[in-house]
Length: 351
View (cartoon, rainbow, N blue to C red):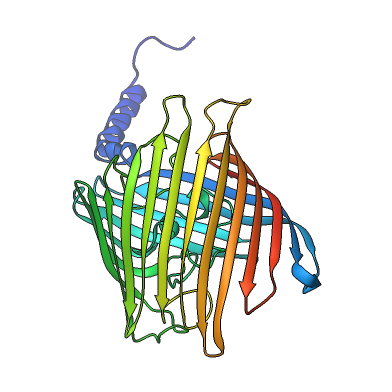
């Protein structure tokens, strides 16, 4: 057994330990109150059967990893946050940085973002594929046709703020060299008005699955040099007392030399309606959705019209974090080809 009395060596060790603790004390709170970091991930995967009218192209049956994302965000101070997100694109087999932004929040009315992020644009761009109501996003030639660096994002600086029912945003961004030349600056602005429940934050959803009553109208525009693009979008969503919900979404967009899907100029519209059934089936609820859109592309040789119809049967397990979609998409062209039909099964999960 050791002695119950303190020796000279014991005293020296205690003094050294006390001195080390005294030196470390100013730094202990710094480590305890370090930046809060959150990490998440998302996956969209599908099986599709694609057929072309008159056998213009071979039919395709394919399993796809459509998208895989990693989300990283952190709090530097109460007023400064950082966002860094990446995406694996299944069609290009590339991993890209889609978001890299510093976000300064002084109040609900004063927010400044700088870096790469979604600029002011239409609702469809501000909700993206993971927060859209339907599966077949960005196939109608209308939604999210604004120019971008990658997946709707661009490099620049932006102000946004909320004032009662109004949410305003505007900023200046890079113009892609292949679009207007690197010497140009792209200016973007959006105004949205929420007449019922308010949508907090800058980014939006395509639906809230009955969590909100929404009547929202948004107007957006971008310009670079003499070219421009603008749009108006609408979302009405009403939750029902039984636990169900219905929603109506619509947009009109015109791309006048800036952005678009084909040709130097185009315009179009779409209308989407959905109904979330109130009765749970197993661990989720079923949702029925239909969408129709038309886009007209202006070519020197004449106009080409695209008509897109989509029908989805969605099984919603945990809103955007877990859902399964059975989808059918019919794309028809006037004065062009090939027409095609898609039938598929899609899976989306996020953490």
